[in-house]
Length: 77
Image (cartoon, rainbow, N blue to C red; front, side, top):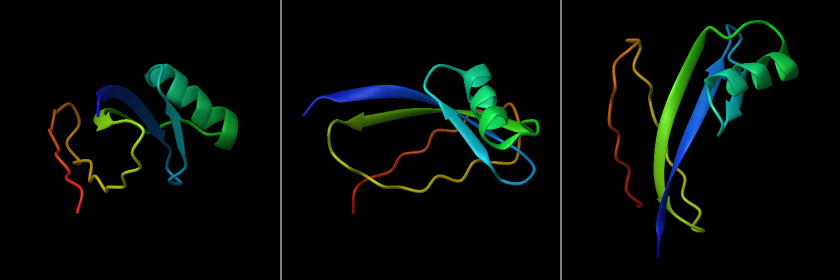
């Protein structure tokens, strides 16, 4: 099965609302503002590599330190 890498951008506001885009951080912030209002307080880029079209669920904890790059690997149970 072939794998593909996706860049997923998340923008989150103070209330925990989130906007998402595959296009970039500006688009994720725009989606957040258009759907929930307010301003983004944090934007995170996730590089997701996965086999398509499998369905796979995982949880990722984003560190509090801004500006650091962390690699997270998840395996199916």
